[in-house]
Length: 328
Ligand code: AMP
Ligand code: MG
Image (cartoon, rainbow, N blue to C red; front, side, top):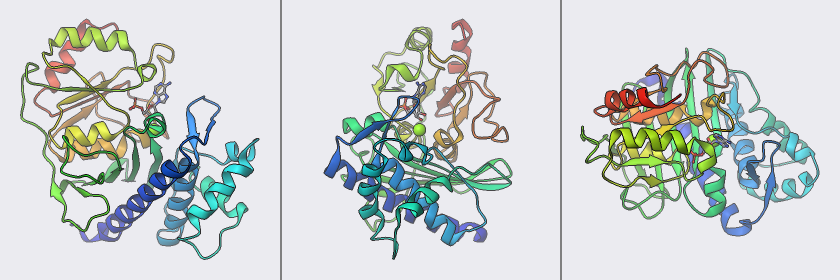
């Protein structure tokens, strides 16, 4: 490991693993406590608690590093916020000596900083719908320096067989130039390197699709799948957990078309950075639907990229070519 990254790697692994414990605690104790964000995607206590937790830890350990994260405390201040705050507090008190309501809102809003030369990006719960359903979700944290992802960590508490050797979920990490690896959550196991599959034919390939049809265009995905003539059925899965599965060679590609209702939607950096590095460092390829690399210099969203294509590398060109017949 490069020396300058050692403490950043240790930090990212530690806070993401602890965040996974927070998330699972919330899921067990209050699976039904959901409120609606303005954009109508469900936001949970876990979202806010994890963002507050990681933002505060980051402020302690790397005070000069900005955090660019998904949530803001605005929803907390609206009706129902007091109830949510009451739930968040006991999740944070084991980690910090004193926690006041005003602190929690301020910590969450520390995640509203802007990208700069060096910054972290966080999705406290990626796949909130999967989280609520009891399916896949991920805590995603990445460090970007000079518009490149240097470290990506994903915690996936529900990911296991047949994709990974674990019954307690997985903690995955990628370090630029150093590869990708995983270990079981809640274990002291050593990290096992991850490698993408070597399939070069769509006859053997397994495609991962979003569980939520509204997140992408089903029509375009079907057109593209027909062009590629897959023989195996696609696997439906929520969140960045999909990227970990491709990185570990247990599926071969995934695609994200902008949804029919939001054709101009651009991907948020916290929804891509950690997962993209995980796949690339495992030997795979990640581009947009035009075959362009992600450009992380455009702010909080990938404004200069359309959609996402993630493959094991061997299938990438075919997958791009097949987009030719799809009306993008
Ligand atoms: P998925 O990977 O499709 O399971 O879902 C997780 C991602 O969907 C999150 O990163 C969200 O940012 C994204 N998402 C949520 N709502 C929408 C939407 N209406 N259109 C496209 N993406 C969405
Ligand atoms: Mg997300």
